[in-house]
Length: 382
Ligand SMILES: Cc1cc2nc3c(=O)[nH]c(=O)nc-3n(C[C@H](O)[C@H](O)[C@H](O)COP(=O)(O)OP(=O)(O)OC[C@H]3O[C@@H](n4cnc5c(N)ncnc54)[C@H](O)[C@@H]3O)c2cc1C
Image (cartoon, rainbow, N blue to C red; front, side):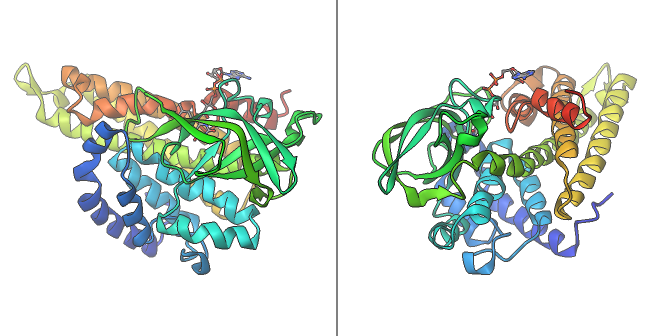
C-alpha cells in the first residue's frame, strides 16, 4: 500500500535518487564503514543534485519540497546503510532550527551552504552527565559584551568530526527555576577559539557515521549566533524533536523492510536436509509474522507522517511510532540474523551490519522509555 502523501513527483525523486545512490553510494559504502566517515565529496554531490534540504525556499537553495520528499530521501539513504543517518540529521533535524528560528541575516549566511553541502551541521544536546534529562545539562553560555563565553562538554554528537556548524544546547541562565527556562540554542562554528573536537567515538555500529565528543573551553561565540530568543531553547527543542523522532522511526521501518528483503532472498537460496530453508514451516511462520508486524508499523507510521505534514499535533503518536517501530527493528534484526545461520554472524553479510546498527535507534532521539513517559503523560498518568 502506498502512503497517501506519496505522489508521482515523490516517486520521480525516488527513482533519480536511487540511480544516484547505485552509482555514488552502494559501491563505496563498505569502504566508508571501514574509514569511519562519509566523504565530504559525497555530501557535495548530494547538494549539487538537490538532495540536501530540498524543503528550503528557492532563495536559500531548496525547491520548497514538502516532508514527503524528506521521507523518500531518508528511506533511500537507509536502504544503503544506517551509517548515512547523519545526512537525515542535517536535512531534517538541525537545519530546520536555523530556518524556523534564525534571523534573516543568519539564514542568508548559513542556509545556502547547508543546501549545497559546503556546510555540514550537528546538534549537541547530550553531555557526559546528561542525556535523557535534557534540562539537566551543564554547558554554560555567559554573556560578555558582544559575545557568549561557552564552557562545557558534549558527547555522542552525530557528524561531530565533520561538522562546520554545531547547534549547541546550553544554559544562558544556570540558576533558572525551573531549569529548562535557562536553556538557549547557540550556533558554534568550527574555527571558534576555545572550541575543540574530541576523539571520534568507537561505536559497535554505524561505523561510517562520525560520532564525537565536543569540548568548549572559554569558547568566545558572537551573541549574533544565538538562535531565537534567550531562554526559549527548550520550547524549540520540544517542538522540533517530533520531526527528529519521526525520522528515526522512518529509518527503522526502511531498515526492517530491507532486512526482510535480504532474508527472504537468503532462505530461498540456502539449503539444509536437501530442501531450501524457506520450505521449513518455522522459517515461513517467523517471516510471515515479521512481515505482518512491519506492515502494521508502516501503516501507522504513514498515518502519523500524513498528520505531521498537515501540521497536526502528533506528539503522542510520534512517541508511539518511535518506540514501537524501533523495538520492532531490533526484533527483525535479531530474527533475520538468526535465519542466516552462521553466515549471519559474518561481516561480509549485510544482515550482520544491520544487526549491529539496529539497537541504537531505540536509544537516540529520546530513548524508548522516554517515549513511553511522554505517552503516559498524554494519557493523564502522572
Ligand atoms: C550513535 C549515537 C548518536 C547520537 N547522536 C546524538 C546527537 O547527534 N546529538 C545529541 O545531542 N545526542 C546524540 N546522542 C545521544 C543520545 O540522544 C542519548 O544517548 C540518549 O538520549 C540517552 O541518553 P544517555 O545516553 O545519557 O542515557 P541515560 O539518560 O543515562 O539513560 C540510560 C538508561 O536509563 C533509561 N532512563 C533514563 N531516564 C529514565 C526514566 N526517567 N525512566 C525510565 N528509564 C529511564 C534510558 O532509557 C536508558 O535505557 C547519540 C547517541 C548515540 C549512541
